[in-house]
Every structure is written in structure tokens, then in C-alpha cells.
Length: 383
Ligand code: TYD
Ligand code: MG
Image (cartoon, rainbow, N blue to C red):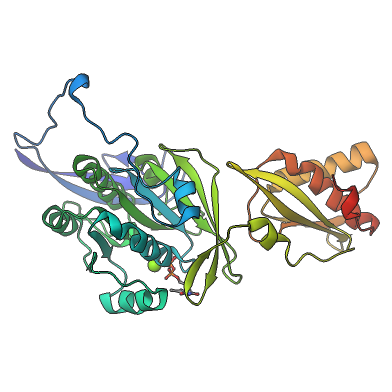
């Protein structure tokens, strides 16, 4: 049976409606509906076969090493066959670089396929030369259609696939443009089916939009097995990879890299790096220990308080939660009589790290108090 069906979908949250709407009833966005046409063909044999639980074979325990320790740990001990890993990050942060280096490590597993819908093979070659990636096991495919990618992958039977990026590929079955919610959902779901059916791990690159979500709304993150965020201060050399969802390992595990002219270099002792430029005997700077996944890290928290000449004083935070800092400002005020009401307060975690752990509250309080009193905290008193 073949039929064509037109629906309308909100590009902001993915809500579908049978007719066009000016305002989305789900997320409240205006003018966000676009037309979607889907041609559905369900043939006999398209459905999955039921299978007895006792007859299911699986690849338990098998993991491929990327030869990048920081990445293997973040993945929960290597790449699981048949898993789909989404790597999200700002454009230009180093996602393509990281995955090319990852493929280099994975080539000992066998042939790998790098699908680039963004860059030409020449551009990738130039990058590979710079990174020292020389291998006969990396196949490049400059293709943007999902059906084309899957058909090549079925013939080539690669051991690993990288798709760069999900925003630039599209399925021929949909009429909407690449990067729209429905295309992203369709392409990632099909790649997921392919990965599970063939037992091939697929890495998907997704750019983070200005709202902070990978490839628009969260639809993509729900579909895949593992979500890694690649972040860092683009001006600085440090890059942090963080697992925010992992069906095969713990979350909040991080890996730390340094971007050099020869690509990404692993940082074995991040604490040393985060503290390397720490000023001594300066007020507002505190070193604290934070547990990131399984690894304790020493990080520097900096705070600056200064008299505000604005009606509503500024509160700026980098690397720690904004509302949490506001709460701690109120605690200082109410419990310790340190009035920050008319002061601008800036709090920063050095090295571009983001910390969720509430155990750093004490360090934030100490850094703000130190800045307010203009008194440096002695390192020996910091325990
Ligand atoms: P890229 O991997 O292209 O980023 P993304 O895929 O996330 O958009 O990396 C882009 C940046 O990395 C670019 O500004 C140049 C820098 N870079 C280096 O500093 N050293 C290198 O060896 C490479 C390959 C890139
Ligand atoms: Mg790229």
C-alpha cells in the first residue's frame, strides 16, 4: 500500500497537528509549523521477526577501544557494537577532529566509514595529514542522502560509521529541508535501526544550536544510546567531553583534551592543567575538589564582587549554576551578614569546566567572601 499524508509539525518542539497552526499548543512557539509530507509504504517482510528471548545472541562484554583513554572512559569503557553515540558541540569546537582521531584508533577493528555531508574529501585529507592519520581502513563518503549512506554501508560492511553531521543529511522520504525536526528524527531513527540490525556502532555529530540543544529540540537525544557533549572555551586550548546520557556506562564522566596544531591531545592530569595559571595570594580564588564521574578533579573557583552602579546588580556565572550562586549570595547575606545586595557578583570555574556538584558550594561561598573582604585565602587553610 502506498499513500501520501500531509501533516504539520512544530520546528521548535516536534509537535504534529493535522492542520496548520499559528501557535504551538505544546511549546507556545509562534509561526513554527511547517508542512511535512510522508509517503508510507509498508510491504510484507518490512516488519521485524519475533524472536524467543532464549535464542537472542548478543555481543555482551565486547567493546572496541578508540585508543583514546579519555574517550574510552567517557563512553563507559569503549564503543559498544550496535550503539549509536551522539557527539554534540558548538560549531568549530573540534568534533570532526575528535572523530577522525577516533577512527584512527578504531581502524584495527577493521574498515571504517566516515560520511561527510559537510566537507569534501580533500578538506578531510588535509585535516588527516595534519593529525597524522594514515590508514587504508578509513573510507570517505561525501553523501547527504540517508538512503545513499545506508546503501553504501550495506555493501561496504564497515565496522564503524561516523556521520558528520545530522543537520546536513536528509531522507528522500520526507519533503522538509535537512536540519528540520522531522528530518533529524527520521535520519537518526533509521541510523539507529541500521546500527542495531548490523551490530555496527554509529557516531553521529550534531551541532549545538544557539538555544543550547543539539540539533534543535531534544528529539535526537531521546533516540540515541549515548550523548556526549564536547565543550570548552573556543578561544582557549582546553576541550572537555562529557557523557550526559549513556545506556552503557555512567554519566557525568569527563575526558579532558588540549587542542594543539597536531589535533587533540589527551590530558592525563587535568588538575595540574586547571591550576597551572592560578595566581597566588589573590583574593577571590579558591581551589576545590570536585568528583566528575569516577575521577576527582582539583579546580579553581574565582569570584569577583564589586560595587554596582546599576539599579539591579549583575550576577554572572560561568561553569556553575546561576540560580545556585544567587542562593549562596542570599545565604552569605542572611547567615553571615555579608551584604552583597548592591554588588555585582561574578563567579567563574577556570578551564571551561561545568560543575553540577553541590559540594562546591563551600568553595563558591569562600571565594565570594574572600573577594568581598579582599583577603586571599591561605592554601594551607583550604582543607
Ligand atoms: P573541527 O573539528 O572542524 O570542528 P567541528 O567539527 O566541531 O566544527 O575543528 C575546528 C577547529 O579546530 C578549527 O578552528 C581549527 C582547530 N584545529 C586545531 O587547532 N588543530 C588541528 O589540528 C585541527 C585539525 C583543527
Ligand atoms: Mg565539523
